[in-house]
Structures are given as C-alpha cells and as structure tokens.
Length: 314
Image (cartoon, rainbow, N blue to C red; front, side):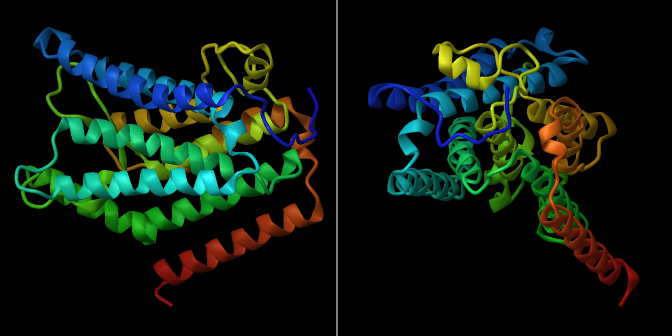
C-alpha cells in the first residue's frame, strides 16, 4: 500500500448505484423494524442490550458507508450536479420529516427510523465529498485537529451546548410539548426491550466518520479492523464485513457516554482513536509539512483564545 491519492474509486453500473442507495435505506429500516418487532418481549432486555445494539447498528452504518463508496460514489465523481441534487433531496426529506413530526401526535418510530437512514445517506454524500481537496495522507492530521477543536468548543460554549440543554430539558420533561428541531439531527437506533428509539450520535459525527473512511480509501490505506481494506473490496468486487477504526472510536464514545451518563463529545474520541491507529501504522501520515504544522498551531491558538474569552471572563 502507498500514500498516493487516486482520483476515484472504481465502480459498476448505474443500476448498481441505484441498488446501493436503496440498500442503505432498506437495510437500516429493515433492521430497525426487525429489532422493534422481535425485541418487544421484556426478556429481550439485559444490561448489555444497549451496548450490543450500539455496536450492531454502528457496524451496519459502516457497511452502508462502504456500499455507498463502492456502488454510488464512482458515479458522483465528476458529476457535482448529481451530488448536489441528491443532497437537496435528502435535505428535503429531512425537512418534510421535521414538519411531519411537529404535527399533532408527534413523530413516531417510523418517522425517526426513516429519518436516521436518510441522515446516514446525507452524511455519506457530504463526508465523501469533503475528501476531494486532500492531496496527501498527512493532511488528514490537521483536519482531525481542526474538527476536534471545533467540536470541543461547540460542546463547551457553542451551539452544541445549547442543543444539549434543549434536548435534556425535553427528555427530562417527559418528552412533552413540541419536539426540538435538534431531535431530527440525531441518529437513533432500535434497542430490544425499548418501546422508543434511542438516540446515539449526531449526523455531524457520522459525516466525519465517512470523511475519514473515504480519506483512508483514497490513499490506499487499510482502516478495517475486521479484514481487508475498502480498496481491496472495491477491486475484488466483493463486500466484506467493514468495521473502520473511526467507527470503533465512535462506538467507544457512545458507550462511554452511556456508561457514565454524561453528554460526551464524540469527535475528539473518534479523532484520538483514528489518529492513534493511522499514525502508528502508516508513516506517510506523519510526513507533516510546514503548512500542516501552521494550521495545527493556528487552530490551537484560536481555540485557546476562545476558551479564555468564554471561561476567563474577558
């Protein structure tokens, strides 16, 4: 494996692209409905049921991201208009689901099941697109630093903090009253023994996971903890179990938040796990240029300054 960028990921026919898109929606919807139906029995509940559900659904979403990059992404390369159209369609669907959820009776499980699958597709469309400007594997490092700093500040003093307070008040108030808009930006999973879906992470978290997955594939590196790389799957035309390092970091963040019963920002954990793996395994990711170090330094200074202003009373 080398660190040279490739222009695209090879793929199949337009029919394969359409089937790939449908498979992402249908697999998530089908799995969610199956868990809701089979898991209604109280016997389905145990102390490990939530962690097991988190792992299974994050792995399912990871396989969905692989299906997207193998079957659909090649047809979007060089066709910006098509990606924009698909992004607008997923956004339209998300807005429609939001207004549907604000109607009398509120949103049901089906609304959030379809909404979560739609958010996963939106994240795949956007996250894979963000990889285009990258030309070197080492550029992934400052991107991770930037997204970590931005997420931490947002959680501590930015919009994510306000969203978290709004959602906490909604849940602690027995989910009475209008459903917050932020509720429709969460990926929710079905858990055996639970009547309602359980929110696990935000769409922004999955956008960055897909970005890291696509970046690794672009530079022909292997981030699959369960076997061959995504690039190998593409070249052999055979989809295998796919558990990317970034997704394992997200699983860890979600389980820590669940276990400690706290609101924990996921992206710093994702970045730490991902960078720890990729920097150790691939020397080319450590070949930082002056511009990379400068970006890291500037982000650190800006983040420290904003934190000082926010918490120092300046």
